[in-house]
Length: 212
Ligand code: SAM
Image (tube, rainbow, N blue to C red):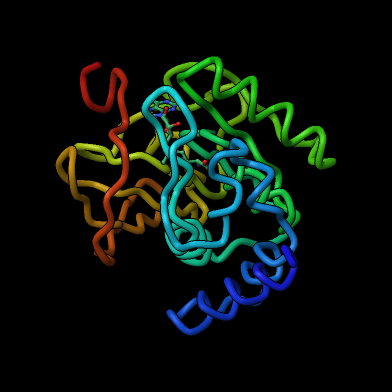
């Protein structure tokens, strides 16, 4: 039943323009229902953001697929995710064979996400609690940075921690209610931004984001 629902959901993502087979394959394997409380688990394969506690949400599946696809990831690359939330996006990345580093500002969310990731066998995901707008300098540079909360602008620390050899960052930028997705590419010290489509994410709160 669940696997049939997941197949339907992957077919829907494909119909909406997700074509990276590595992303579709990972999303067909990660059980999204395991990243939700029992109340919402039955809605796991709807294309909606759902509550996960602390006033936060698990991202809409289309947003997860879209942000992941845009990064054009290769196995073994180092990826920093800002906003662990439920842990679902981190699991999709881990399933694709990339090295995942993820930061969450709400400790209870991080603790639950860690348990879920561990119970599903995603033991290599490295996570910490804190303000992700400052990045994770100890592990930099990153081949890719995926920001899963809406920012007022590109955090300077994240831009600095992106690899100068073709590093990519996907980040929603705008106001608190609505943002445009941007793909930032770094070559040497040069950053080039490409405007993509609009989304509505919860705000990125932190020193280089919105004030709490
Ligand atoms: N990637 C998550 C998932 O798969 O469930 C989506 C989570 S939600 C859309 C965005 C998350 O970003 C929230 O859990 C929120 O607490 C977190 N967040 C917001 N600002 C942050 C910051 N400065 N550092 C780390 N996490 C942050």
